[in-house]
Length: 200
Image (tube, rainbow, N blue to C red; front, side, top):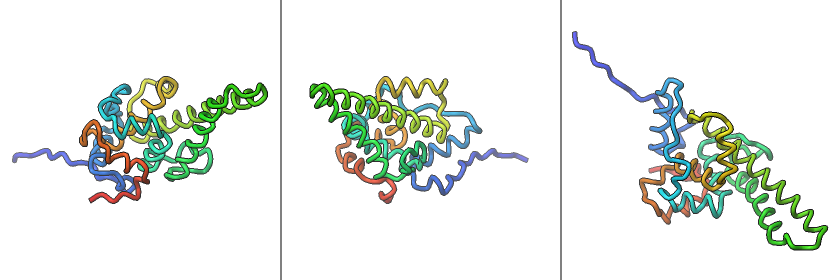
């Protein structure tokens, strides 16, 4: 008797029902890899492939981009302020230190005493943001089984270009590329909790 091998996709768990069709297929592909990792969908420096909203938001308003990634992927870590993967708490956790950094840079030529305080605030905020992004990228990779030589790669990526780090995760997760390099309407989506968007 003839036999036929039928390849079926693994069902997507209820934990990942919030993902769009493209993300569900990507997750199913990860499951079928039998533990083998996959690669990032795009290179670290491929920001030009999706300029708006992906790289533009990562560059200008990174707090929204990283919050959307954590909320959509339901990544609890890092959880410094009990924000978990909730969208708006994550926006604030990143926005506040970035605001402090900008404020410190603006008034860096203030009186000597104030300048020292602002300098300390800038360094503390910078380290916090770097650690937050590093832990988020590592948690994201581990969840979707993305191959990497070592954790040092994540550290170098965050240190070299934070915007590129965020944009790479954003392109990988939300799959903006099929909407073109400049999808202006995507900017509106970038300001909303991805769990509030109902797919049709």
